[in-house]
Image 1 (cartoon, rainbow, N blue to C red):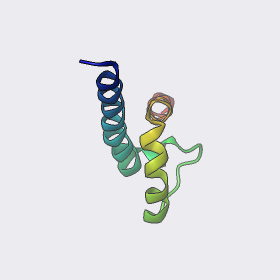
Image 2 (image 1 turned 120 degrees about the vertical axis):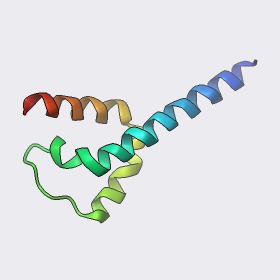
Image 3 (image 1 turned 135 degrees about the vertical axis):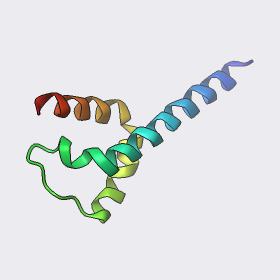
Image 4 (image 1 turned 90 degrees about the horizontal axis):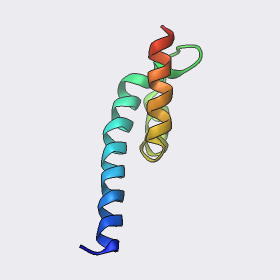
Length: 70
């Protein structure tokens, strides 16, 4: 297995984890992670999805911190 295959596999794993966590966050967690919980429209959720997929470690951390505050 070459270096390129390892890098590709790691990237694929990162994106797969991001897709799962991003989708769950956009569906269930976005309203809870806000400083003041408020409704979020479907359009806003669609716009938040790509960023939450790519930045999933930060999204997950903020989501978990917001759960501990309650």
